[in-house]
Every structure is written in structure tokens, then in C-alpha cells.
Image (tube, rainbow, N blue to C red; front, top):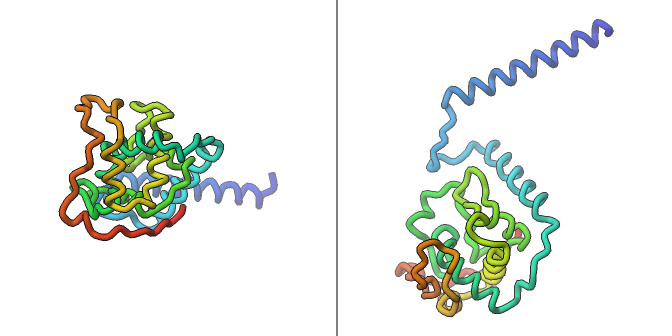
Length: 204
């Protein structure tokens, strides 16, 4: 091997070793604040967001959604959403919940965005690491999860009154452990929840 090539290889190896040592020292130092009330540094936030979005899309792009306009499917999804999702993702007319202010990253407000159904299914089923999004696939079958997707797809079009009406008609969430059979009832909303509904339909 020529002398110049050996020097280059040695320099690259040394650079990698130094970088790895610096990274290990940073991790072990505890200097990075992992608290949920301290936002990520912007480079970390950008990297995590890109990683998350590309990871989800790579795994969801070949999924084949069923008929998401089926009325019974939407009704089933409404009951599950009210019971399982509204505390974090809110609902038409809701401005906040007890748990949401303490979550980081903030869950998307699903009455204000329109998600790709394939991405929504994958995230609901598998969850997202290092976030408050659980993997519901461990306790709910695919058909039930598609019902949730069908309702989430309709959610941005609903007024607070329409949301309450559809949840009231929803069947009980029989997949929930300890279900008391009352998940089809309308949710109790805080007094501030009855303000006008924003109708923005932002897409991914």
C-alpha cells in the first residue's frame, strides 16, 4: 500500500475512534436533558423527525386500506377513538386534556390534520418509540385498527356536535380490558371545549 494511502487510512481510523469516544463521553456524561419538559436540541429534533417519517413510510407504503367510508366501520372507530385516543389527540371542540400538556413530543391534534390512512394504520398498530404513542396492535386486531383509521380520516370534517353524535351511536369498545360497556356514550368535555371548531386539513 502506498505511503499516502496508509496515512489517509490511519487518519480516517483515528477520526472515527475520536468521534466514537466523544459520542460515548457525551452519552455517559448525562449532559443531555432527557426530561419531557425540555425540548430536543434542534439538530436532534430534525434528525428524529426525519427518521420517524421515513421509517413509517417505508413500512406502510404497501398496505391496502379497506373501504374507509363504510358507516359501520366509522362508528366502531368512533367508540375506540373516544375511549383510547382523545385524551392525547383531542377531538373537535376540545382545547386540551389533563395529560396532553405534559407530553413531548406533542401528539398531533387529529381534528386538524388529515393523515395518510396507511401511515395512520401502521402507527396505531405498532406505536412510536420514545413517544407516548402505544402499539395498539397488541390488544386490537387489524380490522379494529382499520376502523379507527376510518374514523380518524373523517375527524377533520366533524363539528363538535357531529363528533358527540357519532360517538353516542358507537358500539361499546369490547376490546378494552375491564370494559364497562359505556364507551359509546358521549365524552364529557371541559367548559372550554365548546368553542368553534377549526377546519384546517393539513396533510403530511
